Image 1 (tube, rainbow, N blue to C red):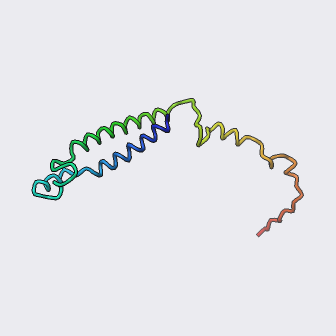
Image 2 (image 1 turned 90 degrees about the horizontal axis):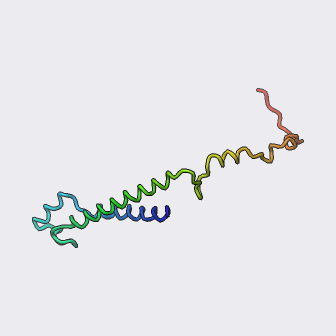
Image 3 (image 1 turned 180 degrees about the vertical axis):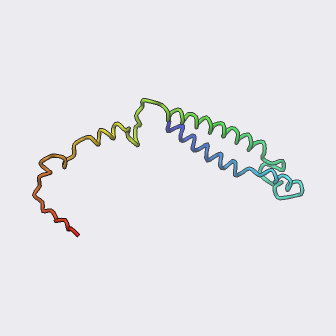
Length: 119
């Protein structure tokens, strides 16, 4: 469920960026009145204000809802993550396990040791 919401969230974010880049600024409307090239656009001489503004608003609302849903899932207490960073208790348990070199037999080795130089 969380992965599906995350995928929808990413798609909405990309669509929002594209829609915002498609929109013209407020100053671009004056150019169409004087015969500028903006009057021959896909959306007509009136512009794409209503369609793109409403679509942007709907996508922004969807982005907000998916953000809140992802935040809710992230704050669920008592559930261990399926993958990723392990819990702190799991890390502490792994650190407290004896290692192969911690046994007394491994401390008594007959390997030659380099002498320290006293300078």
